[in-house]
Length: 329
Image (tube, rainbow, N blue to C red; front, side, top):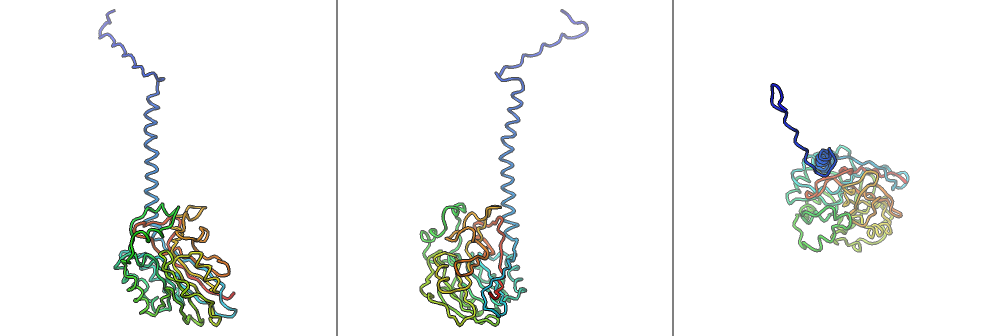
């Protein structure tokens, strides 16, 4: 039938049949958007977490303070600055400046429990970091990373095994200048306690030390220092890098009052309300950092100042140094 004054209406094209209810294609497109949004959100959250862990927390240094009741009655308190695991490279200026500022605490003794280096040119920056602390009594031991430069390892492996086997399978000869590090510290008057016994006057106290080289690379020789402590000393300190229970047991059996170790990085990556995922040695997770008992001795494990350059991040485990005040029992 003709339509007055115009073109006849164009008949609507029939809607293609897809076998789905009307509007199903809209649901499909929305699902695609949601499908892409979830992984993108997770990727963004992961990137933000890594940025926080590698830029902010890794440089968020803190000082742990704790009293340790190990002195005979009536003896004056003594302050020990415990540093460990600097893993220093020349560019870590914030770490260097923060360590240098610790001299303001006026410690009576400085104890360095190893893994100081991560670069051949790091000795000068480390001595600069210590600065006036070198004028104070000090002792040190080595860690594996003072001898061997870092190589990339999958950090997830630490959850089910330690890194000890990596050293036995790969490099035999050290490639970092650990002897030069030791000579520099000894030139300042610090005691080398790698498989050695030593003695220092610290404040008004006569302090006996026993130390071992790093058990993580099988350089510990406890038999060289084995035997009961000297009862004439006011206090007895055991110094090591890795807090392996077999060595802790021997220190305790010989009568050492306080054992000092590092190595664990406090777990480095911790889960809120759970704690460390790994310790990288034989120590149990609850004692991965801080002050605890080990049989008849006190044990302090430092969470450390740094990280390996190949794993430059910390999460819920900020870098630290510790000021331990020895007080009467």
